[in-house]
Picture: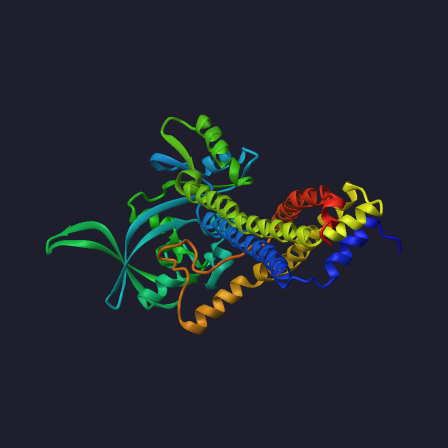
Length: 413
């Protein structure tokens, strides 16, 4: 099949054995540089995407997108639910009563956030019902004082489903025998695990039981909201605030977890820019390799010029060589990067199990594993950046080759 002259010669130069092993080594380093840069960029961006995804699905799946809060306990919460759902962005609304206290079992004591929920409505707001290890949200019945614990919390307390546990509230009761803390016995009816920090400090009870403990029977502290577009939550709660009476106010997730989300986005962008330096180094290696190749091939360039090759053709020949070096490294890098992004979570889990270590602790981070979310858009962007860098790296050496003068190059041959 016919090939254009510059492409034909460029491919021949690429396949030919060079007299200088040093230049061949430089070319190998260039390929390796592109491979390493593309591979690392794809894997790291996938991991950062994974953290962002876990933040959305696990953390923001457990906390409400928005809240309607009453300055005083709310007794007409069903009417507020209907009002909130009139906004087309609001998917669901659920009442809640929040308490703080301690759970005690066989001498083990843990501080917890106790959230009173309406099981049927809460399942529309939270992902917890999809992550139940034992039991279901509907196992919480009003008046039965059942409780659902996070898995890590249950392990810390050494309690299983069906066992009793003591809740201690930070409020003293005055009796003839003295002052005693308020205690209430609960039965564990379920255990959930979302593999996030909430597993260690969240307990769920029925909203009516929570209202009794908070001494606001028949009332709630507020409503939790789920909106269609996570990033419009602030706009939605602002609209609801304008419709609410003066004794209500609204808030959204961005005020409690917005900084964390923004930090992940910033880190992703900064890490991406820093890792692009690896590709830049590989591009400089291509420049060095081609400059030395031009010096080595001056006689060949001069002969081609005397045979009628134009400076543009000579320039294209060396651009083809540089692009081939970059293309090989990029293709290998994309393959390794995609494979790495798809398996990094399993590899990290295997290393943790093999050596008995833990890369991430839910006591410090919001997840206890290394997530990964490979996105086609990232692969395309990384590939495009690497190809552009490869192309730019060929311009100067190719231009230098096109300026070789045949008479001067052949004078000492």
